[in-house]
Length: 171
Image (tube, rainbow, N blue to C red; front, side, top):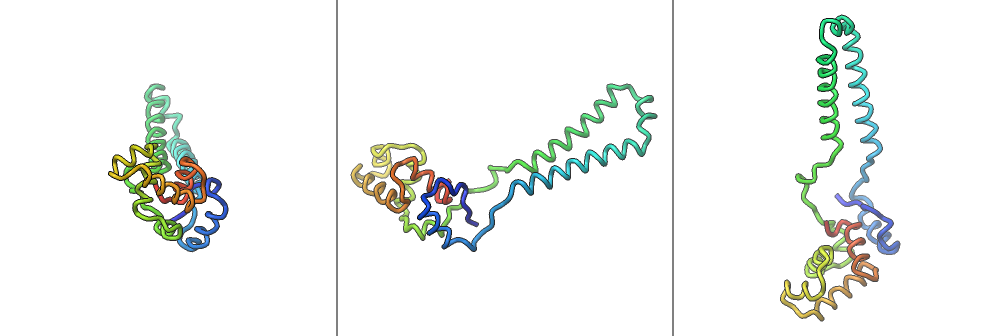
């Protein structure tokens, strides 16, 4: 599934061209709805615990149990709820592998070599370092980078990486 990460970093003409191609391929997830849902779930759990304590006449148990033990039980309950909610709200980056946006790559006409060079640019490698690792001339790298700038409609290395990440071409 393909979606923009940050449309503001993509040149408008490029964003419109790629957006028109991939407009029907995905939906944008709303973090506000997720946060609201888990907030209501967490609030409901708190209300349930409060009702449960009222139901068993917690005053009687407080008098029978030392205050520290009562506080410890309540703390353990809220820690467990907090850990559960935290795990549900926090994305697990270890499970997902990056899948490049094939539609954007095809619409931009990026070659496999240009994608490889774009990956090196994202790592911050210089032209000379890229040329050494790919065993080609630095002038060849300059040509590939110029082609990348033209295809991504940008004017610099940083902007090329930003545009590629916004289009989900590179991680």
